Length: 264
Image 1 (spheres, rainbow, N blue to C red):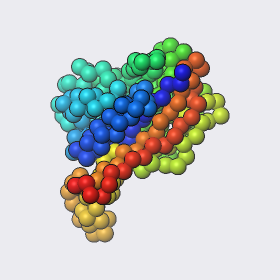
Image 2: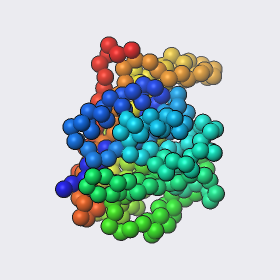
Image 3: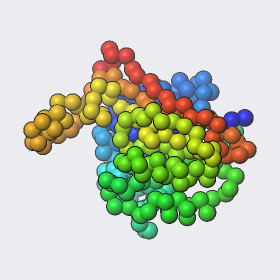
Image 4: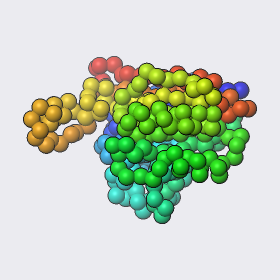
């Protein structure tokens, strides 16, 4: 049997949490996926996550939550993240950073490893993601599929990582830019890849924020507070089919659901 894993793009605020809950419930009820990996680093009003919000997402159907450059946006997480093994910060952070960068996820038909990785180009300082993955893969069982959320800005760095890990992991999915890309593919050695799976949050927005203050900042240069937008939500991600015997991907299909415009 193939293992079907839904990976969900960055959740932004309450709208993102709501649409995530609605969509995942339907997919779970239909037995359409065996597991759900979601990036939750913008779940708390667009900046980080709390344990309470992580619990909300786990209750809604998430099996593991990944983070990124906003991992520490909510200060409480520094002292609490180690208590939740399913909540991951990037694996390539300096030694001694609290929390964990990967987790073994059990499903009804088998297990896989979820990894949170962060890029360095146009991002906050981090250890080398390529060397970090080499070290991590050397410590993992060879017969367990690995799903990597590569939270990075530069498309070139993401594409390079996909090829670097091709044949060594089941999938490399990009997050962080909040814009779903059209390059979902199976790489030559059997790794599923997409540069960015997109965003889960307000559909009518600038990557989740109210449009007017963003336009003011761009057109005048005057700082403005970027509030989370209101209105209907959108969920973006991808469904990856993995062969349980080989641990390699069979297919990757971008997933997109948008609420109707009459939602407020």
